Length: 461
Image 1 (cartoon, rainbow, N blue to C red):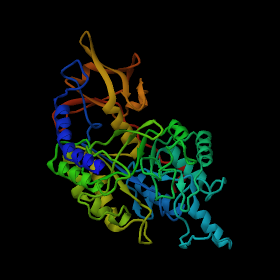
Image 2: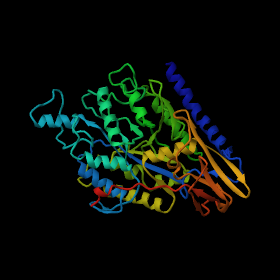
Image 3: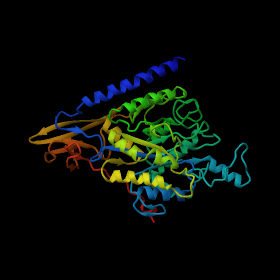
């Protein structure tokens, strides 16, 4: 009863606190000591940002998976049509227990209490089922991970009957180290059988030091900065401009959470919040957008046109916000890889990206960019008639304070009065930038170039 009351009060006050936070941010001119310099919210010329974050469940074969990735991320001719050329990522598992049980069933070694559905696969994993042998397609999958087009680990695997042990995480991390994999985003998967999940729910034991499933002490140091515990939102545009409608949706989401007391979620419509795991480690957590009104709630391919159609994209750009969209691209009722309505919705997104309105990139890159802009410390210095923007550090509760590398600053854009007499400096050196013409605000800017991902050449026809 006490918890329900506290959540109710918090839910009522959250919209007020959010509005105060937005007003306070509007009053802040930045970290600059020069009135003509400010940090632009998105890379030039974009007004909003989108990542399509797809879980790997039910992707029935690697061949279908690869064909889909080529359509989304290249401009090649594919079975679906000419590719979109967008930076859209995907996810993977290390283990697939359901696939192992299928193999056992076919070999007349049925598992008691397990019903085999007959599908040829249940998702893409690096290891062959539940074994320590790599899958036949592992080399191609590793290439996609290294290229950045697979950027999320959807927990360590699909444990349909339970059975996750710390030793599985240790083996997976050893493989990641051998292959120099740099995956920074973790998303929880499945039901109570998947005890490696992270978070407050009693069956999420991956960050519980007293559990045989505990692994956070080796997983987080392996490079994971961002986690998704399960929070979904109906608000279009996180970190966007003030919206009465989004405030009402936040209150609605708090009311929904009264029925689900295993975890507390922040409903401040921010893209990133600091979350403390059960073992005391801190990470960034993020929500995923599922639909604008609470209907069409299934995160599957068939619903994408309604969940992420043109009206949602237009509202996102108007809100000047971030959005990480939750779906399962591999879950489709059709033999076709994508339905015509989904293809139309994705092409609209492509057109908005090409026109400069919408910044589309992978989940990992979008979250990293947001964290950089949120926690970047900088100042300006005048030397003669030249203005220098000096990058000092990135400081936050999760990672402490550190001096970023040039690669961490990709896309960072500063408004300036005169692009001819300004330079960006890091560690005493000039950072290469490009000069931008005025955007919709009429202001000039300079940007650290954004380096696009490169699809592995060996996986293109």
